[in-house]
Image (cartoon, rainbow, N blue to C red):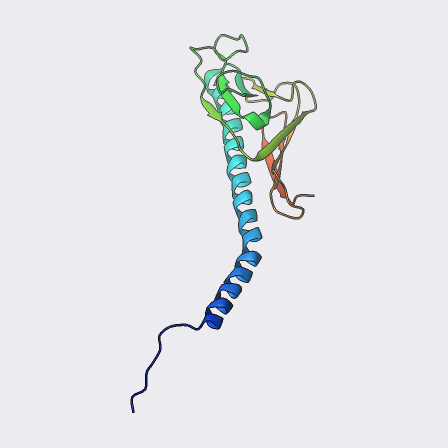
Length: 174
């Protein structure tokens, strides 16, 4: 007598496999989304710190003020930090990014919130002198994912001291 082996699945086995897969996906998806958002925040934090360092080093290198400002269009100051920012060296001292002072760096962020507060001066503009010091006092920045799920590691706080040094802390969303 010959025995037949079946390589197929029964309907019940197939439904069980689909149900187990759906449960696993339901449990893993929120953590995966949080990981993606945390990665975006980390990337934007690194870009922000690199831009601050560039503005400071340009001021030291050139002896002219180094600027970093909130920019909505990538070519002039204006807007909020969420829109992006612009870095340039002010060679003619008019506090405007002119055509001959081509921007050294422009960045934009998406799905993130970057808010600044100023201890002195304008919170939307950073100006470094020839010694790399920040004019107009300290600035504090908060960068977070939008939305920021409570308890998720998607919040960064920056303190930019008057000496031009940036310190960053990783925090969880409230």
